[in-house]
Image 1 (cartoon, rainbow, N blue to C red):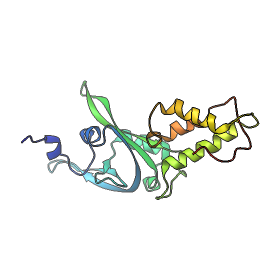
Image 2 (cartoon, helix red, strand yellow):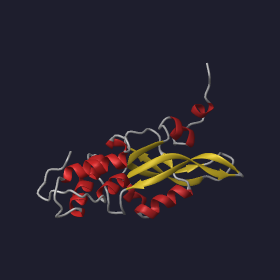
Image 3 (cartoon, helix red, strand yellow):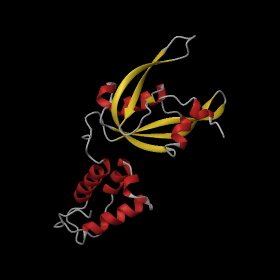
Image 4 (spheres, rainbow, N blue to C red):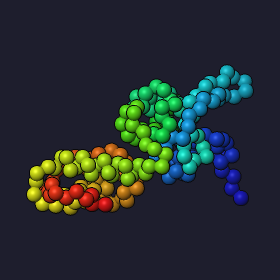
Length: 191
């Protein structure tokens, strides 16, 4: 029987191997809560880190300086205000000690500090509805069928991916499409 050393030393926090293998390289989570924990070996001073905990995930994400700065730039420095927001966690590469190594990076989804989703809201449905509303505003007064234009824009951006895999930025791209045919009287969204 093989013993995977990454499993033995995995701990309670996500690491690059966990994200790459268990999360298949990338996953978007809703931040459930935030804590501060101490890390370090017994023979060295402990370092405090902010740890994010996610809905539906047993492991937390201890933030390194890079990820702390990425998130704070998007959502502000009050980490308690990050609860309820959507965060993409993904594996990447970085240079360390002269060689390329696996790492974990984050990508905040959504706008600035006031932009949160209720715990029960589906981010995909929220982003899709927002894209539809913006799409209608971007295409006023043109003749034709707006729903077909929206579906066409979705096909171009999605490139075969199901809508559940699209990010908020994908939906924002769909919203900016201009169509040659448009029906301003069509109030029903094409979904």
